[in-house]
Length: 540
Image (cartoon, rainbow, N blue to C red):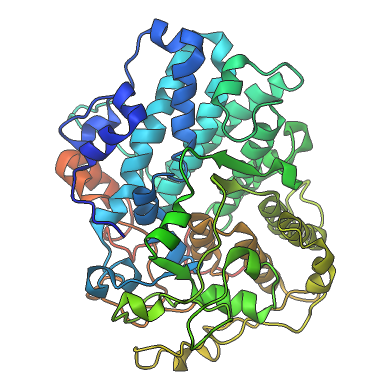
């Protein structure tokens, strides 16, 4: 990890695109009120700048900047969601993994997406309102901002969305409470889906071809499928807290008349990056991250062949040749202790947003819940596994895997542990799942859901944000609790961290709005307060 001592303003202005498009301001509130001011002549010149807005936004749905990615993704949800473990004892081991939440890290979740997604998306939507020929860009801008800002809300809670660029009577920028955010997301997606449905079969515009970093825009169908799948993902997020809205929005996504879901791997959504994938830098050049213990336990217990597509065998003499992970929330005395545990494989220069396998697992849960057009839960579940294995060229091994009715997650033992009791606590319920792979129609719906979510968790790798969100929503897959908890009593070890606080900069520069947002949480602005959809009773 590199130490970032310069200000957020300097970070924003150091990006070449932002140097051209925006200037720094003196406080954070201005980042929410300073849309990219350009003349129509500048924007319309060969569509280059308007395309640049959307390219910038797509590349920050999940940040491509390595420092931002490490802070906003890797040292938060990647570890909390069980995918990875930090090998370094950052801040003398008092950090996010041990529940001493670090505002200087976690504010990156907020800052990057407001500067690099909300700002350019807002500008494109403004331009489209004045130019009918930009309606496809309007649709893409709405899809992109929902994709990014849902991730922010699902870590923090209330966010600035409908009031972006609007000062209230007290000269603050108001937040939307979580109960109001999802209808706003659905409204944006409804608008985008309606537009793209109307464009299906028509030639793709020049500006869309320049702007699109995922599909090269041979047609509009793939973004339509992505928007429907995102709608289904967000609908299921509300399944416990607002089942009526969840069902209504989910069934709209499932309605084949609306364009369908991601269903085959050619539909997978990857954003082309302008830099090397951040995990390659974090994992190899900086050597800061390794495989997470839950991945070893679950994939190792299942003898899952995809493990070799995700991780590299350990080189440490104590575990040589094994796939060996690091547990989060332990005492790490030195980075060198875990330096030769399993690294993440090197990635091509593209960022995974959503894959067809996830869509099939979403449909499997929707079928369990009896939603229209969801199909059969078992068929959807097995097809999700099929699509995931196909992604990695493992088709020949998928039948045996799906029919394995005995393999279960295995105990995790760390031969290099320095934390008393770390290995003793993992050898039984409730910290070690007993779920098997093969579908069993005799199981109750809670057990069926555990099976679906566990396989979805494996298939979505390395999207730690979605993994952590689904873990909090459903309680699955079953993950290991921390051993070292340095939250000073703010966050209980069980059930663990549930969210990230509103950035301190917001309290300093947008205080009235931040305080009102915190008051809407239903608890203190700490990592222990559950988001609205993260209900305590998760029984089906």
